[in-house]
Length: 310
Image (cartoon, rainbow, N blue to C red; front, top):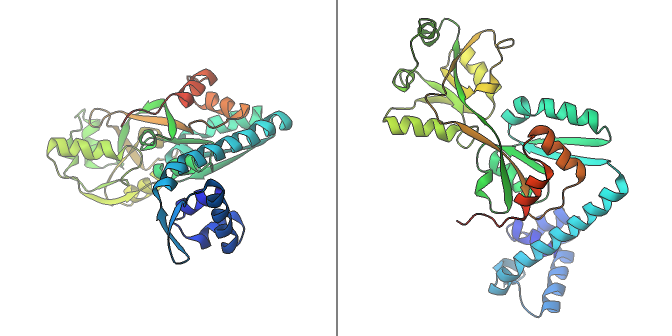
């Protein structure tokens, strides 16, 4: 079953499947044939020795295989949970902004309370985070964009946040703020913009605001890392738009921040877990540490609910 699942995930490339499963390509082919023989039907279309796609029966059987493998993983995790008595590994997948600005306090407090749990933090795009969760490579995913779009995941709201505009000290926008002048989109459109890449940290709300206003958005540099954005704003490349939490007055002494909550829609960060998965006790403990409103009962209910239609 793992050979079948990985064959689909790896685009029917049996060489890659063999590498992932630490076996040989003939071994993968043999396992697939054995399962097909046992089921009495072909799961894959073939062109010579190559697999080219799923058959109709293969498409019907694949979700069942995924479910059986997930339950097998749940069984393994449950047995480890009872045997390990609080020891283990917790893998958190997050965007850079979450890992850098939202997670540190929760990670510190959790580590102090659970010293025998090793924490791994993977950073990536929201869609990478979603795939890591679906593939079982992460226990928890945290991001603002995309997580709610995957029916395989239960994505729960954590907290709301807004954007800030950042400029070098002495910049015309900073001087205007000091005079009590309100920042407008029209004024912001006069400057080159440095902000997040598409799909990161509320970028969609930035694009939507300029589009609705019929104003040009002149982005001269985009990055997924707020620290990178701040660096290039300090160099004078443009006006920055970042998550408000990413501006630290004590550290960012060369920059001024202007509240932009009136310009862009409020953003919602979500915490996601894979539906139907078994979460060890300390995973629930970390979730509650990071988002106190997400107690165990709330998370368990979300994981068992059917995914939203559409």
